[in-house]
Length: 303
Image (cartoon, rainbow, N blue to C red; front, side, top):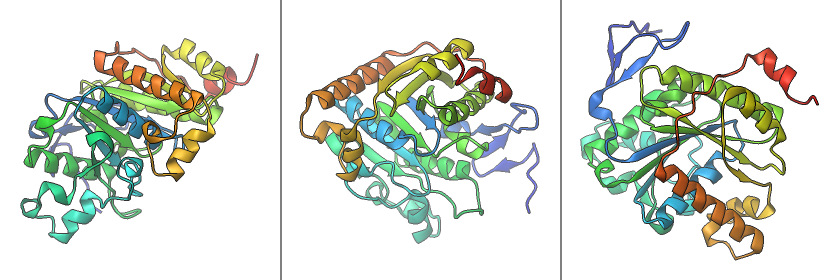
């Protein structure tokens, strides 16, 4: 087992001061900073609909005429398949084919065009139990920078794996301007959201990332999230109900803007367009204060 000290330089990152009790902040190499584009990181409980949300948000930004890059940060590499209609190979898989000599790669080896010109990358991940997702994100951004692909991008969306449980999967927060959280109106989603709020607060001590708000997904009501928002200072950016047409869009490998028109679908598309416009215009950073675990139990589910 390799022990990393605070003074070591690690694959494009340099150590930095702690960003929380028992936590070590790993600083971003300035050469890997994403300049120019607006960068958003999408988080939330596993299975809550982050990839569906990210892909339709990417499509909405493209409808606004923005040049969009979506980066999937999940080993199962399915973030972009509704945009590209297929599971595209991951950056890590492609780097392995050239023994990690990135200079041998061409952009078309790892970046794929999807719906309405959205550019799609799947970072992938290390085999289970063998590595850190943060390294994968770093290698992906490094590759994009080497090929100057970020210079022609207006919006970058990181679609991040599940709940934040380690510094590695919080790595996209080093690049993002705003982090948004996808959550349903239930205890488990809100509990996970509170942990993500904690992670964003930790990263904001050393980076520019700030919390942008919550996207309520797969929910008829918002009462439980409203309770949480009032206590913590979080705000709802958009609300998407639990509609069968959204579920079917994943089965059809299509973003909602490609699906056959219906009154409910038109309303959902309009909400995505409004969300994209709101994020592009810039949301106020939310000075959210996360709750203690026990306090969430006391808050939710009681009148």
